[in-house]
Image (cartoon, rainbow, N blue to C red):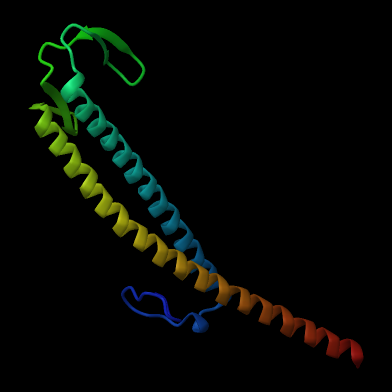
Length: 165
């Protein structure tokens, strides 16, 4: 889409050949894409943060889990009940889509480390895409601004010439 040094995606179109209306449509589409990608970025970062917290808890728990201590067991996001650990070296891991697997703490830590690493790669890739789209958006906005100024300046000159006659 981009000309003027942007990253080409599919067919290249020179922004200078588009009308102000077409540029407005392109700008609107890019705005929507950047917003969607930014939301996806935020969701991936939130998921990575959750996995990092799970990893921290599992690593901390390898040495501090005690069968005698009371713990709070989450039933929902806001409802917890008291409980005791039956096997402190075993944990239940949410592997996605409502499936849970029992793992030893070392395997659970490895699982969460892999998840954090995978998400870091996805976040980095998405960050590059967002930057490219944002750069394209700036180019479109600049060309659109120039076209609007040129159209406004041309009308002003025409009116001035009529008044002088």
